[in-house]
Image 1 (spheres, rainbow, N blue to C red):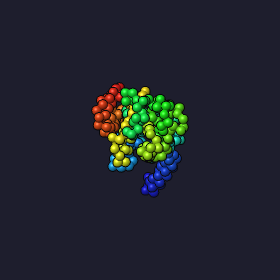
Image 2 (image 1 turned 30 degrees about the horizontal axis):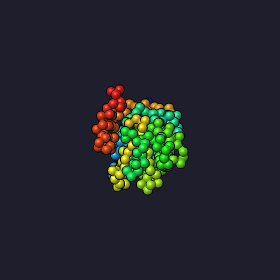
Image 3 (image 1 turned 90 degrees about the horizontal axis):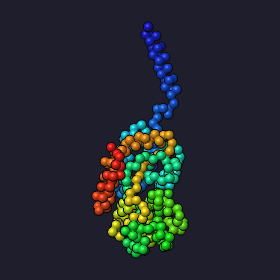
Image 4 (image 1 turned 180 degrees about the vertical axis):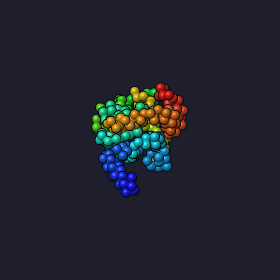
Length: 294
């Protein structure tokens, strides 16, 4: 073949290659975008202060992202209400800090449990402890009877889950009993309201409240935490993705990654944030959280 003929062949092949490539949809070349929604939730996620980025999930998320290179990962900060809304928008949206609830299960596909955490309870200032005394047994508070028998105000984060039993109780309470907060700094603001005596009771998680109290420069010894009667000592968080084919596929991969992380890594990261007198028991108990893990 002449030199001119070879050049013509090369030109034709080049044109043919370009035609074939242009026929492939652009989506085939782009990675699926995975949107991670996070809220400020010490000690799981910490957005500000000297411990910024050192929370349990702050350290978990890069481990997941590194081992899921098939996705284009983006992280967005939201409050709880907005996070719930985004999980219902049928995009590939995931939240690594979710409690399972029947309501969320209607639109979220959950991973296997990733971490056992201390359950929610009442955070009370020491000066208000006498108000609770008739309703406390074995250092646990009968929350239903307390709220039915007193005019005390209970602060809660709007659309947050505190475990299915506690969530069910909250739904039965009169609106005037609750002080709901929707903001990004909801727990900090509720603690401020409690300090100003605008509410007496705060429903929350002690490691989170303890961290935020310290960040304000207040004394944790001025506060007392009461577990709630009838609520298990521990509850479990999950990674949850929008319940779509892409979300279910992503959770399948995430489950594989969590198997070793939830046994060997995450309990130690969480224990660092507990009261020293709680750490040893937690680490012992955590060995029984997932007995079937290899």
